[in-house]
Amino acid sequence: MSFSRAVESILSRQVLSCPPSATVSEAAFAMCREHCGAIIVMGEDGRPVGVWTESDAVRLDLQQSDVAATLVAAVMSSPVRTIAANASIQEVTALLHQQRMRHLVVTEPGNDRVIGVVSTTDIVINQEAEFFCA
Image (cartoon, rainbow, N blue to C red; front, side, top):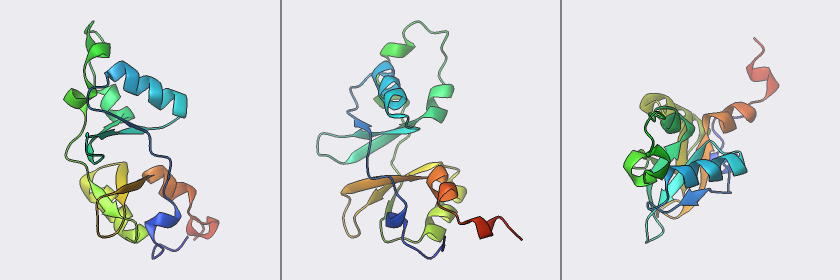
């Protein structure tokens, strides 16, 4: 994989999303059903307002009886970090590392229309074998 390639060549175009009014239970069920590590929380205007990830889920106190009914808006990460689809994989990798994140929302260049999500897993999966051989 060339790190100068655009992120749009490796992103996941199937974006799992939910409204801010979804419960933790609903969001977790959707993530399990789709085998997805993150769900994008979308506002009424169709713009991302937050992200809820499996890492966020692990931080929940499952001893609380009402945690499943908690609104995802109360536990999501916000603001959403985005990157343009024409950004290089190297730029994405650096941003993920600097921000200590595992997922970025990918938008069309020049506007904020969501076209996909890229994760550290996408980057690792798309690396060529010679990257690991030295």
